[in-house]
Image 1 (cartoon, helix red, strand yellow):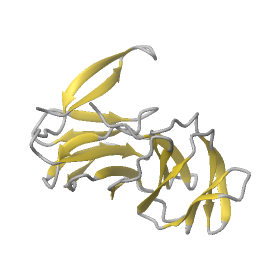
Image 2: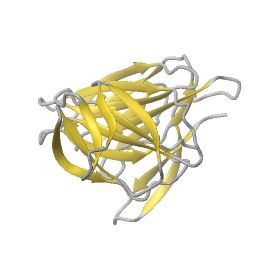
Image 3: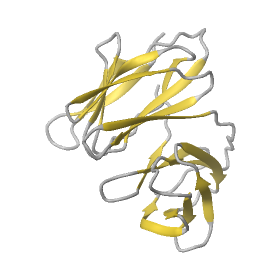
Image 4: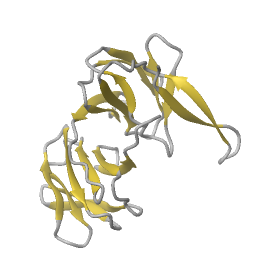
Length: 221
């Protein structure tokens, strides 16, 4: 049994896509499941080359966050990340039941900083939305997320390199970043959040300053 990642490959005009099934990292039915996804936090394309196979994962444009892939727990996962013509070795393992995000963050010299952030979520509620905040920008001290136009903090002073997750009601939502007690940048507006679904907000550095972007957490099939 192999975990299959469906990669949508754009061909020709926008909107013309085909789906290709590419085995990335194998996992057996008798092994403990763990989950791994990849996030491109920059504007340049990011590509993963899985060790021991011809599989590639390409992240850019509107598709910068992959699905979570089922991988074998506690086993070495190896490959290379490529961006701006440079290669970066990747080697990590994921614990049983853990969800790990590997984030590629561009540096000022057109390099890539690779961060790994993990969680073991246990907050499922079919009537609520599960929202995570990844604080990955060291220039934003005491990183917090507040509801736009209100003094309501969804996440408060999340340490850099970590994430926090909480359950909220499935409502229309707009959030804004607060660094060192001051609002920064423009609001991030979600589409209608759905009950029993999971979402992530990423705080990352950029040439224009601290940046927020969001993604729905999806487990690949």
